[in-house]
Length: 386
Image (tube, rainbow, N blue to C red; front, top):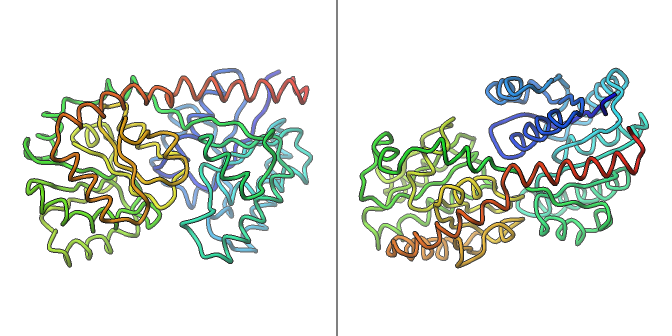
């Protein structure tokens, strides 16, 4: 009989944590595990739910599970997950992200699920909340780690940051990247000239692309503020922001105040990520916090150099000066300077892009799946679940 696994995530949306969770369920199912994926349908986005089902995931609703702290709803979500555990009888519960991680692991403790895995997909130690709220959430993570057999970080740096905050023990941790299907991504990407023509971009423009949810933690406000300094040195510069989110009106207002309305194009959400990335001269990830930066690996796999910040797991992905450029977070001047350097030097962009393409393979789907399945096999053996 196959080992039953219950995955729990707050919501399925366009983004790295959801894509990683769905891909993990697919890989485990192919390896013979019986997986169920639980999420709040109310907080999820229809395209992501449809994608999970299309790829063969069995998805069930936890109606009360929400991203924000809400004691009554959280208590209801705990009860809903407990009922789901009693119905599904999983041998392993695998939780994803902070809220689902705490509620799901508490349910697993109460229901005495034999094995518990948690995957934070980053952390909340800086960039999200003020000091008091961060301290409370960190304390909750420390407590939940005591109920956990394995904690999956996206990078080795992510492990170090958790341990530095007193969360768990070194033996609990395993690094498994958010795997990117590098070969399929390259196969789906059009030629650069074709991508620019389809997007209406001038062939000779210096095109900077930012891709992700338009939320403060992603730092796109910094990128918009850096644009005047880039345009002053490279008049053809143009910025594409690909994604949707609550910060869009604010970003529009910043661009208008700087006289950049004609230079900034916000495309909204897209299903054609390769086309937008391959059209870029440089992809920028100016995040204030980031678990790994899936878009970084996607860009690198396509041979596009990246400028990113030195936060979270990013320095484990981008080697400064070898396959991209790293700058300190919230430093608009440094961000502009890095873009000007790359904008002025096509040969440097080609050199970094070639190295980036090779580096991306360390974060491919095949590498991630191999590490994930090894983690599961060891846990099944240690807990005698099969």
